[in-house]
Image (cartoon, rainbow, N blue to C red; front, side, top):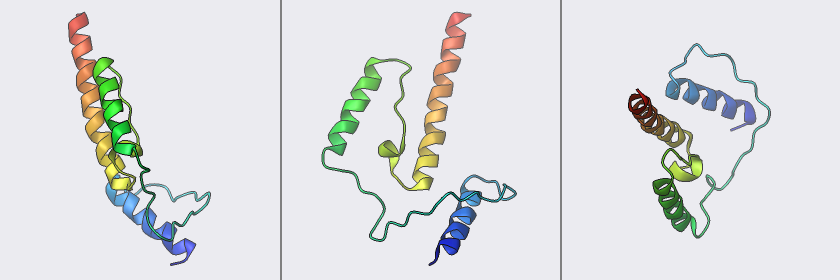
Length: 100
């Protein structure tokens, strides 16, 4: 698959995931091909995630987000983002109610 084909397939997938079939054409700055696989987590990653969870429990209103939490595949990142946005929204709504 050449770079143009990769850009086309990624663009089609993004339009499906983001539900924007009429979105603007992509502006491609570069293409990086990982010939063997998607990036892998390093040793100790699970322990680091456990530490982050503990930090979040101890600091109300702190959320540490990113593909290192949910998976490096784009759909995983989008799903995690939507789900965490709900958590943040609920937190902010609760803060607003408590102030009133």
